[in-house]
Image (tube, rainbow, N blue to C red; front, side, top):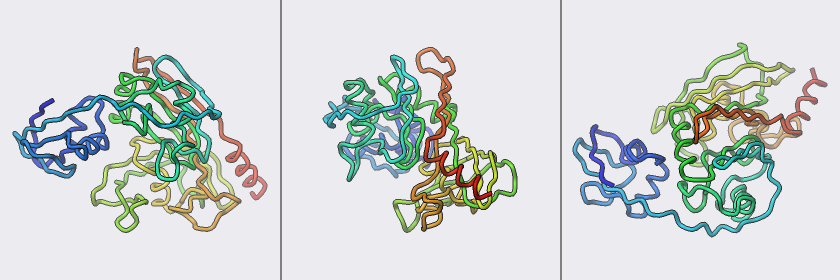
Length: 301
C-alpha cells in the first residue's frame, strides 16, 4: 500500500494510524521495527516528521500463527456472540503475555476457551485484545473474535464512541459532586514505567467523574472515560490530589485499609455492535474486594 502525506510535521506512526484502516500507532511502530514501512524509499522511524508529498509504502504481513500456550482457566464471560466476547477480568490477572507472564494471562485462557478463534490485528502476543485494563484493575474487557470486529471496535475506541465507566475509591473528600479532568497524559520524564500529566510528548486525555458516596477520609466515585490513555483514571485522580486507594504507584506508598493495589473496577462497557450497529451495554457488579472495602468505610463513618 502506498500513501502520500498531505500535511507537514505529522509523525509517521500517527499518519499510518490515520491512513490505514484498523491500524494503531503501536501496530505501525511494530511494522517499522520489522522494516515494513518505507518513507520515500528509506526505512521509516516512528518519530519521522512528514512533509507534504512524501510517499509512504506499507507492507502489512499476514498474521503470524499464534504459538502462545493455550491454558484452561476460569473465565467469567458476560457477553458473547459470533464477533465479540466480553470478559469480567478479576483483579490480579495480566491481560497479555509480557516479561514475567508468559503462560498465566487472559490471552492464554482465551486461546483455550475459543480454540484460537481470535483476531490477529494486534499481533502474535495480543490476539483479540481490542483494549487493555491493568493487572490490578478488575472489570469488563472487550475481545474481538475476528479481524472485522477488531477493526470496527478499534475505530470506536479511536473516535471515543465506545463508552467505559469505572468505579473507584479515592483518598480524601472531593469538594464538588462531579467534574471533569481535562489534562494531557504522557510518559513520566524519569520513570518510564509511569505516566503523568504533562505537556511534553503527551496526548489529550479527558475523564468525567461523579461522587457516588462519601466516607470519612475517602470517596466512592464513578469515572467515565472520554479518552483511553494508559493509567488514565489513576493519573487523573492523583493529579486532582485524590489518588485511588491502594495505588502505590501514583498514590500513597503504604497500604491503607488492607489494600495493596488500586480499588478500580471497569463496571460498564457500551459499544455499537460491529456487525449491525445495534447498541450493546454490558455491566459487571462490584467485585467482592471492592464491596469489603465499602463495608469497612461504612463502619468507620
